[in-house]
Length: 429
Ligand SMILES: *Cc1c(COP(=O)(O)O)cnc(C)c1O
Image 1 (cartoon, rainbow, N blue to C red):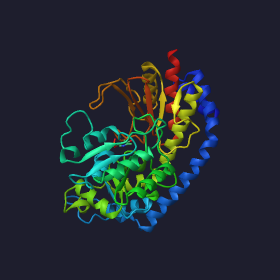
Image 2: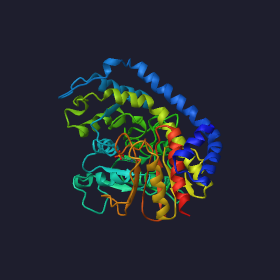
Image 3: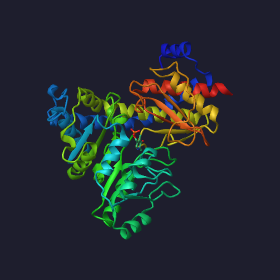
Image 4: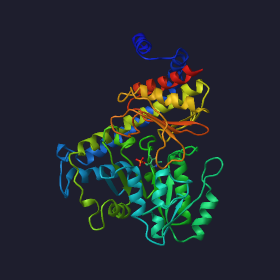
């Protein structure tokens, strides 16, 4: 580290002395781990570059349509660029998806009919999808459940792995199952995320039992962390958020769906309405940022992974348990750290906040967020509201007091945020 950098940090920020020592150690410890991710980044950058070139993307694709948005050149070409990157027949990339949940919801809702069943094989889906499927204890107005589409959930085993036998038996015995839901990333569950090789295994297994089911993967937080994506190992349909990896921190919002043409089309009728699908939808001048975000995404996603690995390491050195561990192979950008006490969790989040480019002066406090049963603390000082490809940390105020840390548009900033987080924790004593 440049002496100047060190002095600047010490002189301008409240850096705890012990935290700073661990920080410098963690930088050394993680250097070698990063090499592998740099290679993945380079490969994915090439993949994205080639897709742009093959689609002959030009300035004329930075469209600024209004009204119905029929024949929006830029929008339609971006669908094809995504399809090339994910090796699928079709793509549907839209700023009109209000979030990842919306894109995932449209993908699922478009491809089931009354009487069909959905089977979740990676345990309970992410919190916000429970309302879509009708899995919460409350009445879920408008959910698939209300339309006579039932969802069954097969929990993971104690090691957080797929229960292959139970999946097979359920699929064999229940011919109403039309769609399989698999979630790559952990969400707020305490299991590991699924590596592509694990997804491949379960997808192939399902295929052997049943040819006819649609295999859907929730790819949130997973894009560009490995050199291939779930659609390259047999997933039929996949969706995610542009406020995470693939928006590259530049897309102002939106979501995407990629997969087999027929399934993407069905999904498009739930983004708009049957008969219109993806053919309408003005993009109001947003196309350039969707393209630019995608172009940056391989780089930015790996910067975020480095921040996560660094965070795991420095917190390990400080005696905290994290998952994944710093040396574990990654398939998403999430890092969980267990604080074991509410004060430390809150302090850590406040350190992340203090290190943000936006709203660094704000103090984080736990609050009763709608839809959650305990109070939640959230640190986010982002250019795009709620964007989690930007450095952010959050966690429920309940045992064992875990913070979920993700994002970081660049590692130089990410590691400072983590340093300030740890500083505030060690300051408590
Ligand atoms: C973030 C996330 C979602 C939902 O995305 P939003 O943009 O927050 O709606 C769904 N599934 C997983 C695994 C996620 O991490």
